[in-house]
Image (cartoon, rainbow, N blue to C red; front, side):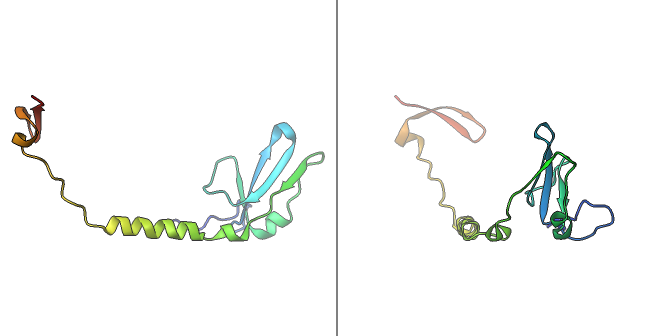
Length: 119
């Protein structure tokens, strides 16, 4: 598992809780929940730096509220994981290959593959 992402501010080693992106065309700074993965043009900020964030004069700061329920795995995530584990643990039924005389006459063989005619 990768280590927790850290605040992008110089000399700050606290864990990041929010991601800051800029929309230059609209002169807007958008501060939202921590992005799923780090991006080169986004800045991860700790709680302290995200609260103290200010934008250049004339710019708008758009703060998107963090969803506390989204910070950990949801019940849907846990159920999907449990289903995947159960599915992986199921025994695989052997593949039944009908003999050539039941389905047709074998005309060609190439390695483990057979070509059967339907006559």
